[in-house]
Length: 408
Image 1 (cartoon, rainbow, N blue to C red):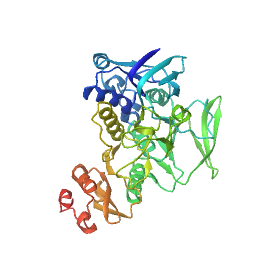
Image 2: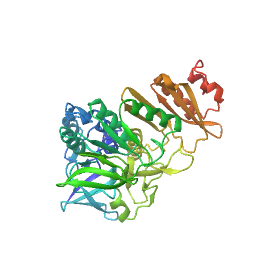
Image 3: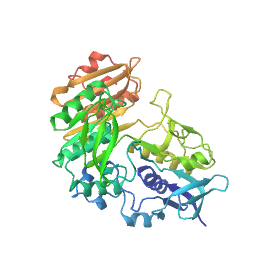
Image 4: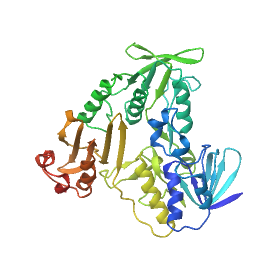
């Protein structure tokens, strides 16, 4: 049985950055990353954008070249999946029957795409988008698809719809809620993006639920909505969120929360010497109004990785990073800072019709977040409004003649 000083499960941004941060912090012990993927760690954001084009070079999207991992003494165990953890023995069991030991375990396995119950797993023409293999399969399917339906009006669904339109495809988008981004955006932003996607030719169906999927010769042919409408579909892409991959942790007795594994401010789980970071880690965020939540973002993955690395080299510090996020759709760049949970005021700064504006969110008179569309200066300067808990008046915030940095 091989054993490592630090064993990292998962090769996404969280897992890869944990290994990188450990070496950057001076950690000299043995490190291994075990992952069920067959590829070197790679950038995930392009998967819902550029990577859908067959012109995209996945090798250029590598987080680090292959030589880096060897030079840094980081062993990559590709194509293997952890199926159980023995927290007392400090070992993990693999799906190929192997066993690995660890002194410290960092769980960064992320999540798997959430399935639609009415869609058979073995139906051809149905796609999810979480990894390189998914993107490559969609590339191939696009060469013969004529009727494309995207289910899910969140960021993944909208980014995919925009990417496909940019490739010259016609897209129908189905969303169960009464508006796009209903769980993460205010109505002004939802309405703006709805109008933009409609202008680009996306056929959007709101308040629409998939009741059944019809197949022909084992391939998806159409889907039927609950209101009876039938939509032709020879390529169905489902983007309705993820389910965190935490079963081995749960079976080992780790405490759970917010659908993930619960961690403290140093990313420690309730299992001895086991940490969790990234999409699957539930924590009390300093900007989340005391809630236990999970953040599915590159920022969170990188910052939590740095927290664990510092902890393991004896320079521990609590996780308190400002959450931020971005989304590219057509020629629009959305940049978000903070968390707009339970906001009670949404102040529009700028002219929405100009396609360059910001929305600043308040709760109890305090700025808690902002969304910026094609407004990078507002985003860069406005982050301090959140970190300094600005109480600037609504009128001052809305006044574009006042530099936003002066409001903090």
